[in-house]
Length: 348
Image (cartoon, rainbow, N blue to C red; front, side, top):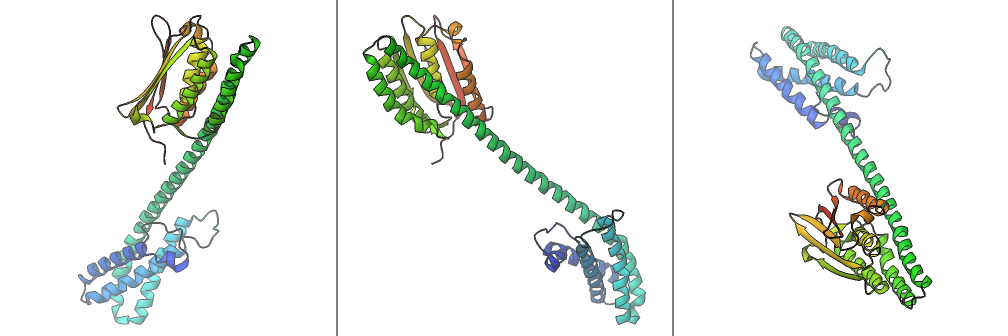
């Protein structure tokens, strides 16, 4: 009988596949040995008889597995295979009786034993085949579902990232417009710096993966641009632990936090403030902390809908829920934004 389905093989290669043949040989030898212990016939003769019957059973069991391709609705294929087994056993015995008339008495015991055990073995094999097929289908479905979910996540991540780009660009251009409207001599210089910044930043905005070292360079360029716009109102410091430099993070993660600190913390403050950015490793997790001394959460809470909600969604898509973004108020005023996520390097 079969111990596993062999869908890739065809014809005799499938019917007499080695796992099936091996099981048939073992069962036939065992049946022949048992028969030889209860009669005067040489044991080798009983083994050969059992092998002949077993080969016939194996043939019809495999042949009716796929043939005929269409069956009447009232005849399940399992029933057809079992009927074929019951018929082929006495048929094989009849052939052996014609070849060896003196052994007819011993053939009756062989036929009875084969008919008693062979259908049950066949049923067990069919159930095993169905179980394997169900498992294979479930595994294939799970792979297909995982691939679909990955594609959906990639599409959503690309959409989130695309939403970040105009958000950042419009904010920066609004800052330059304010300088132009006020007649500031810094406007031309800031615009020149912005052009140089965008030439370096735009390719990273479209990247599917980035390192924290890239993020820090991008943020440093952004803060230099913002400090040029308000030199007396913005101070900043950036610290990146070397162990975290090559770690992966969604593009523009750090920039989103720093931009919010500038736009909602430092800009509304009459005296400006300071932004401290620290990135380090802790228990195989990366921690990003952006702390400002701006106006605090009361003002910040009115304008964080797009930026931080977008960032939370991107973190969820990138780390599957194993990333946290928290906001806390800093005394006497200011906000601390902190992100924690698993530390893994960008593939080379």
